[in-house]
Length: 252
Image 1 (cartoon, helix red, strand yellow):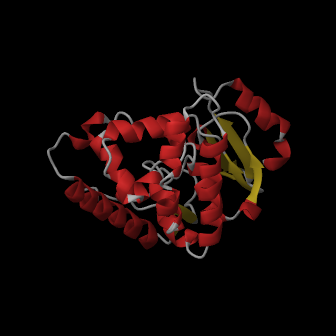
Image 2 (cartoon, helix red, strand yellow; image 1 turned 60 degrees about the horizontal axis):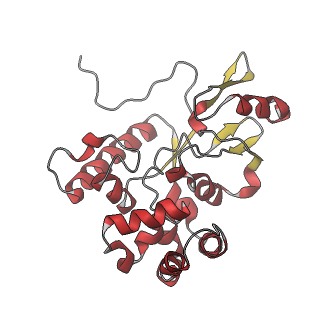
Image 3 (cartoon, one colour; image 1 turned 135 degrees about the vertical axis):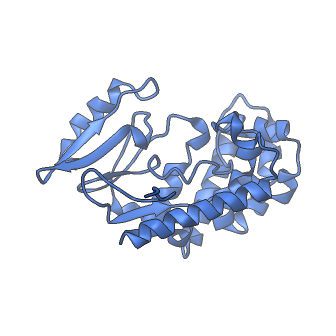
């Protein structure tokens, strides 16, 4: 009997709800320059166009979702959860533009003014803007990649959310509620903000102060008792474990 291409299994118990994000236009830059965005450089070695690659990725994603739902697992889409939160999304984007305007004192006025010139383009459709960042502006998207990367690396915000579909990282599920991690990779720094916006700040019980990836922390149940597994990596460090021990009531 052949093993199906997509299937769902678990060594503990079946998850009840999974949060997903279907690949979209925000993945374009990762396809065009994967190493800069933290992707495997082989992603675009097949001489396929981005449009064809995206169509195949979306088809694969939908097959995965179909398999999960056929197993009785509820699947929630990030885009759906963001609907109706345009005002909050707009406020968040405006906040990020204020960081550009008032932060990083050593940065030239010229590049600061350059980035701020795209604010209206990005904010006019906040749900699109929150996923595409400055790329939501057609004027900005048409610029040479070197010029765009200069803006991203300088301000470390308002960038396309190329990795947002790795949903195990931007949020940690604890027994008493959700925990907001602090991402180790600067290109993924906004992901926890966007996921928190979608899920509702009222559902969060803690915000990590030390740098981590959500995937470094796993919660599971043994004999009905929640167990927390904290992985220590070069990016996270022992301070994360110390912080978690200081907040043991979150995991009780």
